[in-house]
Length: 477
Ligand code: NAD
Image 1 (cartoon, helix red, strand yellow):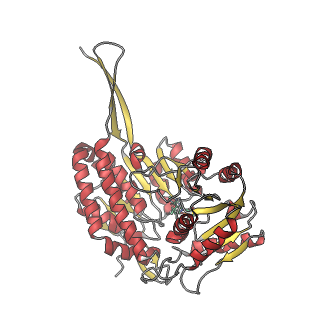
Image 2 (cartoon, helix red, strand yellow):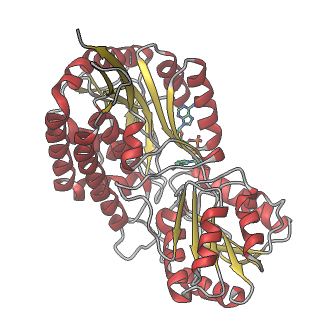
C-alpha cells in the first residue's frame, strides 16, 4: 500500500489548505500510485511561523537533549527501514537492497550529527590587556530552508535535517515531488521521536513557488540545496540578494582515471559498481573514464563485460541489480545525449537505448570516441552512461579533468604514489578517492568546487554551515 504524502506543519500531518495534490508514478510501471500535497502560500506562511516560534525552545534545549531526540529518530528509521525502503523503490525505482542501504545510511547520518552536535565548541582567545576575556561563541543560524532531490530521497534529507537540528536550527524541508512518501516516512521518525512542533516541517509543491517564498522570507536565515547547477545558481542568486547563507551541492561530471599501473581488477569492479548504482543518477558517479593507453583496450573490454552482467528491471524484483530511471525527464535526456554523441562520432559499445517499452528503463551504456564538443563530454548525464577516452601523460589527464566547470568528485586508480600525488594536487575537485570507493560517509566532508557548489553536506564542515560565531570581549570591572 502506497501512503499518499501530506504536509507536516506545526507538528501535524495534513493535506494542503486548498486540498491540491499532484500525482506520484512508479517509474518501473509508469502507473500512478498516489499523490502528494501541493502547499499553498498560506501553508508556507504557517510553516515559517511555526519554525520561527520553535527556534528559541529548540536552541535552549541544548546539545545533549537535542542529541537524545535525534538518536531516537535515527533508531526509529532503522526499525522502519524495510517499510521505508519498499516505498522508496515503488516511487524512485532503485532496487530494494539499494533502497534499504540508503535508509540505514540515513540513520547513520542522523546519529553521527546527533553526536557531532555535542562538540560545537567556542574558543577563548588570550587578550592583549590584563582583565580582558575574549570569547568566540558558536550559535545556531536560525530557520533553514532545505531543498532535497529525488535521487537519494532520504539520504539527502538526512544530511540537511541532521545537520540543521543538531546545530540548533529548525528546518523547513521541501521534499522531492517525484519521490515524496519515503521522505515523509523519514520525517515521521523525527515527529515520533519527540521533535517539538515547528522544528521540522515538510512541504511539497511547485518548486519555484516554494523557493521564491522561502528564500525571500525574512525569517529564513539559510538555504541548503541539492540538485542541478542551473537551479542552484538561480537559488544562490536569490539568496545572495537577501544576504542569506547557502550550502549548494550541485552537479558533477566525475573523471575516473585509470593508469597503466593500476590494480586492474579492483579498478573495473569498483568503477562499474559506482557507475551503475542508482542507475547512474548520482552526483558523484564516475562519468568520464580516462584510461591510460597501455590498458585502455583491455579495461574497456573488461568494463563492458562487467556492465553486461547488470540485470535491469523493476527494483522490487529481487534479481534486479539496476532499476529504471526515476522519471520520464531522465529518459528524454538520455536519448538526446546519446543521439548527440553518435552524431558527433561516438561509438556505442553497449546499450545506448531504452529497454522494453514500458517503464523508464535505460540500458547500461558504454560509449567511446566522443569529441570534446559532444554534449555528453560537457553536460552531466545523470544516468547509466560511461564515456571512455584514452590518455598518455598524467599532465594531459589533469588538464582534461579540469576542463569542465564542474569539480565535485574524482576517482583515480594507480600503483604509483607519485602519480597519485600529482593527481590529487592538480585536480580541482571537492572529493577524490584513490584506489577504492571512499566517499559519502557521514563523517566525511561532502561537497564540490567551481560550478559544483560550495559548503559541505557531510562531516564537521557541514555543521559549520548551520552556525554563526559571536565574538564577545569583556573587560572585567
Ligand atoms: P531539476 O534541476 O529541475 O530538479 C532537481 C531538483 O531541484 C529537484 O528535486 C527539484 O524539485 C528541485 N528544483 C527544481 N527547480 C527548483 C526551484 N526553482 N526551487 C527549488 N527547487 C527546485 O532537474 P530534474 O529533472 O529533477 O533532475 C535533473 C538534473 O538535476 C540532473 O541533471 C542533475 O544534474 C540534477 N540533480 C542533481 C542531484 C545531486 O545530487 N546533486 C540530485 C538530483 C538532480
